[in-house]
Image (tube, rainbow, N blue to C red):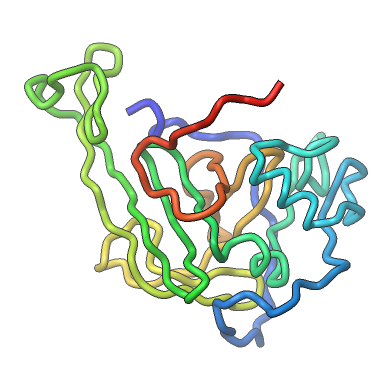
Length: 216
C-alpha cells in the first residue's frame, strides 16, 4: 500500500530524557510558557514555538525548515520537550491518510487507529481505492484496522500512550515527537515509526482527511 509502506529517509530524531523524570498529567498547563522556543532557520532555539505550532497546524514548514538543529552533512531534529508537547498535542490529531490517526483528547485519553497492510486476492479490491483496500501496480492490498484507545501522559520529553501498533498485546510505550519542516515524526529513541505525518486541529479520525481549498 503506497502510503503506509514508504520509508521516510534523511533525518533521525535525536533526543534524551532525564532518568529521574516523573510521569505527569496529560492535561495541558493552565497557561503555556510565553518564552518556549524551538529550532528555526539558524538551527538554534531562536523561533517561538507557538508560531512554529501555528504553522504546523496550517500545513506550513516555517522559515528555513523549522525543527532542524543541524542540516548537512547530517540532518538532526530535536524532539519536543515537555512544555512543547503540552502545547502541541492536547486537542489535536497526528495522522496520515490510510496509515494512522491519533487524537489526543485534553481529558488525557487517546482515540484513533493504525492500519496494517498486506497483499490480498484481487477479489478483495472491487475498485482501485477504498478505505481499507487499494490496488497498487496491479496488486491488491487490504488493511487490518487496529484501534488506538487508552490514556496518555507526559514523562520527561516523551508522551506515553497505547503502543503505536494499536495492538493491545503490545501494551503501553513512550515516544518522542519532533517537527521536521511541515511534518511530525514519531520515534522511541531506537527507530522512527513510518514516514512524516500531519498535525491537525481537533479530532480528525477519518481514513482520508478532508482538505479545504487553499488560500490564494
